[in-house]
Image 1 (cartoon, one colour):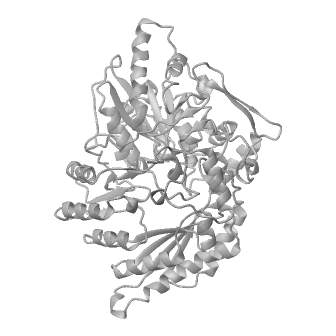
Image 2 (cartoon, one colour):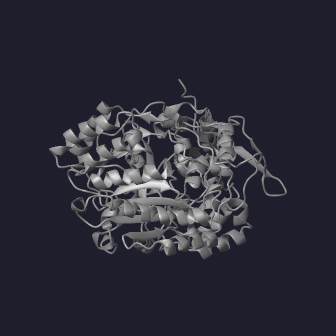
Image 3 (tube, one colour):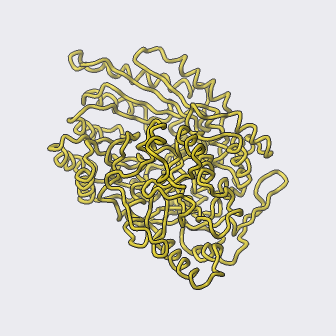
Amino acid sequence: MSRKQLSNSDLVRVVKPGCYTGGEYNAVVKETDTNNLTRFAFCFPDTYEVGMSHLGLQILYFFLNRREDTWCERAFMPWVDMISLLGETGTPLFAIESGDMLKDFDMLGFTLQYEMSYTNVLAMLDLAGIPLNANEREEEWPLIVAGGPCATNPEPMADFVDFFYIGDGEATLDTVLDRYREFKQAKHTNAASSKVDFLASICDIPGIYVPRFYDVTYNDDGTINSFLPNHPAAPTTVLRAFAPSLGFFPDRFIVPLTESVHNRAVVEIARGCMRGCRFCQAGFIYRPVRERTQQDVLAHAEALLDATGHDEISLLALSACDHENFGPLIDALLEQTAKRRVNISLPSTRVDAVSLTALAKTQAVRKSSLTVAPEAGSQKMRDIINKNLTEDDILEGCYLAYRAGFDKIKLYFMAGLPGEDQDDVLAIADMAEKVVETYYRLDYEDRKRPVSVSVSTACFVPKPFTPFQWAAMVYPGDFTQDQQAVKSRIRKKQISYRYHDAKTAQVEGVLARGDRRLGRAILAAYRSGAVFDGWSERFRYDLWLAAFTQEDIDPVFYAHRERPADEQLPWDFINIGVAKKFLLREWDRSQTGKTTPNCRDGCTGCGCGCAG
């Protein structure tokens, strides 16, 4: 049975049937010939509304569908009402475009954007009727591949995935699909050709990691003793897939039938970041910075607006204002979009005169809030994390923003950073109050509306391939105390305050730096009912604690201890481009509060090979 057997009377029983019907504008439909077409399902382990707001989905969807021999479709984690309907009707999980069952595809590609989506991956496989463990899937089952930022530590999901793709999707995915086409054709003439043969054939491709081809042994204290290949095709070191320039970009996006988290066109103007903030995984794994030219950005923006009808376009980058041609780019884009009454938005803003002047220009169509990420309240902590931003920089930037007409500012901070004490925590509240006070430096007639400052604190979670990958994570109770201390310190009514859940952060921390022994706990948590763990109203901390206990997993070992420099880490076999000795040097510098300049001010010798 497939979606085609679900009647309209079935679908109207769910809150958002448009998430499951397909037929969106710009979606790709191809003639299905299973002998000549590779069927690939891009599986997003969260809801349609979230997945359709993800730029990576749109890029890879059209990147794969540009191939005549491949049809890439989409599948999303159904919401709880649809899960019930699938169970009641006996309908396996299906792809959106064709409605065909996922278990009939050649490959299912899961994007791992967030550790708390891991149980959703298992849920999607289960709903599709596919065995969860890779060693239980025989030849007739589709290959399961996973990529995305969390794939830089693939080990917690190693039990469930046939191969991981680590790095830029545009770099070597074509080669993987070419090899699969050869394998599929060979199977028609040689029935002995197996899935393992295919997996061995792609091990020489940058970015490919096949977990079954490696064995791990452990020391008595639980740390890794050895991590070695057990197959002659498997390399000792897995090199990331890297696209040296940003070439492909779709000329159209799929337009959702129902409201998504972000209803706008998005152009990626750069990938990577030159800043070197020591907590930021994306800032290291996507090095070096690669930028699109102004001409390309304008062409992509024009094409997307023509193809979608969106009234907003966002310029996406880890630090959009660091684009070398940022000011002229904004001016040219404004000239292009003004006649359409299209708003321009930026996900991140540097608080300096050039950036804020450009940003103010983008608000001509409609005003929005300004987002600033000091990350830490005290200068000591900003130096530890290498933010390279002073209090004067922040306050002067906010003043310039107020002068430009902004009266709503969002401030993002982290709690629990390495080296933090109580004074540093309280400095978050003090900084927020100073931002409010800065508004009143304006002349009275320039204060057109009351100022509003929104403060958010996230719980710091150490991530692989960052200088803080060796750091100990703060315990949930300490996080909660810090968050309450900030809340109590805030006095001004213009400030609203919210904070992330510390228990969710702890589980995220365990999974982020876990090894393949975590697979048992992930499976146990899922079997006991853990799904949609990234949704606060669905997260069940008790289920995770029970799963950890059942599988003899100690959260302290994985999340709350500082690792020594000589410990073999679960992801050490991956070469992400940045040298481990550089990360270790940055870890050492953080402990004495020494900052490191950004890449544009001089090469810092990170090892990614972009100097000169």
